Length: 306
Image (cartoon, rainbow, N blue to C red; front, side):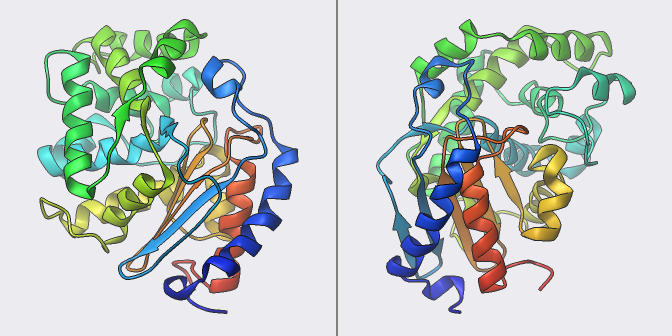
């Protein structure tokens, strides 16, 4: 089989159409209205390396990144604040509990287990620069747009729907983090977290962001290799929540999913694969996108352990 750098559009379409049939095994998220109206059978994918790209599906579709923003919030803070500071704010250990688990946070005595679960991402949102949530979201958005030459923007409709949805799990996390003196400003931290999760883009934007982590992009501000290494390692071990260990074996790539159906796979030193497929499994991972990336990784021997 050809390497990632020479996978043709025809070959990608064949892989994608087979994976797309798996969408029937999942369901779109129901608690956030704009996401609930998504077509569960849709699959868009964009593969990009330093000198090659290929795509399939409705690549013009925009979607909120949701939890796929988490690795990039981590990257931003590593770049601007340094590794030592970030390690004081959040752990780097996998969790086998749900991404919004209060039980996990209590077991860890208020110290978030990793940046890919909600407690860790909220703790990092508390550390983004700016006096308002809008300033913080804008700072992250502008930095990513400049670094990766992309066009992320806040989806105000999705943000309103998020604020009107059941937020009880995240509110409980914020209350506990505040009680443990992890957050400087609890309400601001949650507002910031909700806004950055509602940054939207297309699969072409997401794959360009992935190239920052793959080391195949030319960012406006150089990134330290050790920062990319930290983000990729945390994605590999924590990016798919309780199924991270399974897919580390079966796919072997840094991965991050979002409940919108976004999925990013980083192929270090080669490029990235970005997908949008709204039908999710019980964990909250996009079914068709995972099936696609899994088959590509196995056939093209993309695993970092190959």
